[in-house]
Every structure is written in structure tokens, then in C-alpha cells.
Length: 240
Image (cartoon, rainbow, N blue to C red; front, side, top):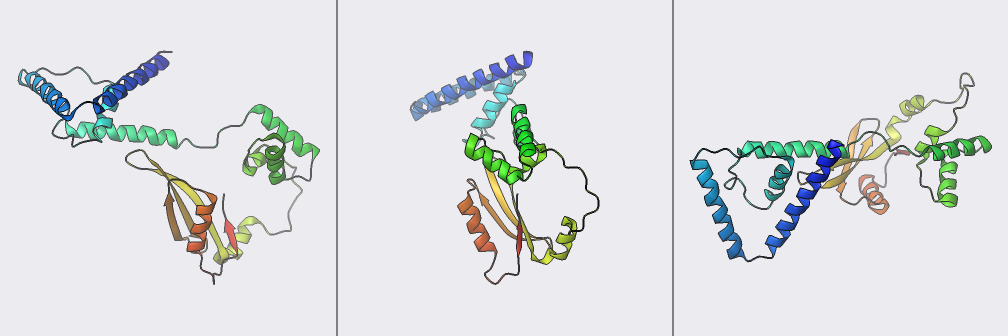
């Protein structure tokens, strides 16, 4: 309860600071310069008298970090050392990255799990692709085939297999396999970018890297066209 109240208070204070910032944008440059000098003079009096400011809370830290992006802040910083402000920014970056990098896929509702199991039992010839398409076309529920496979009833073991296992297939065709995937990076200004990489399975060599802020099927297809020559030797592409 206390954590929720603290978070609400923080958001409220940030909203007030944002409103004040927008209001200042509408003021004249001469008025802002005069107010800036007025505040600096008062701060200098506190420094001369040796008075220390009160402990800086989270809202003040976030506000100072945000404002420091707009001008050369080193000469205007008085309450803490420059390395302290840099440390605050790094802490904020780590918290943001931890929030963006939450592991695993989000859990689906229990009712949808039971529906997937029921569809798999009543239609034993359907695979995860067919079940995922049925859910999308008839119910408008978008679920990846990998998620569907996770909740399908497990088939009992039927003894040793005579077909080629996946690891054997990879070893036999390593030179003809490419693997591609996306991963996410966050810039220093907390902008999310998507990096598309293509890896040659046999040599473990990166053959292409592309970066975009808005990944789409057309963009990904163009990356594949640029990376793979027309006279290539590849026969298989592994992707998520």
C-alpha cells in the first residue's frame, strides 16, 4: 500500500514538473534568463553560508536528469557533484532496461490454455500451426504456434525413433543453414531499437546486421535480399 502511494505521489510530482516546463516554454527568453540568474544568486548564498540542501528525492532526481538533456548542465549543477548526476542517469537506465528485459513471454489466460488443450484432444491431426490459425480466424485470438505447443497435451513416448533427429540434421546441413533473429537495444535517451542479425550456422559467422526503430515484414525481407546473394549455397533458414 505504501509503495503504491509513493508511486502515485512520484507520478503526480512529475506531472507538475512537466506542466511547469511547458509553461516556461511559452515565456520570453529575457524573463527566463532573469529568473535563472535570480535562482543562481540565491543558491550561491546557501553555498557561501555552508548550508546543505535537504536529501534529494526520486522526483527531483528524475527532473534533473530530464532537464540535463536540454543544455550544458555541468556549470549549473550546484547541489551534487557531476558524477552523482551521471550515476543517477545510469541507475535510471538500469531500471528501464530491467523493465524492458523481463524474461519470458507473458502468460495467457487459464481459459485459453484449456481451450488449446481441448482443441488438441478433439482434433488429433492438428498441429500447433493449425490451432493457432483457427484461434485467430474464428475467435480473433492471436497466439504464436510456439505458445500453443507449450500448452498442448504431451504425447506418450513411442520408443526409439528411426528418423533423423534435429541435432543430426544440423550437423549434416550446417553449411547450408542460416539463422536470423531480432534483439532489442536501448539508447542513452531510452529509445528502443531493434537489431536484426543473420548468422551462418556452419561457421558461426555474422553475415548481416540491420537496425531499425520500426521492424516490419517488408523491412525484414529487404534485409534478407541484401544479405543473401543470388548464387548462394544456403537451403534452410531458421527463424523465430
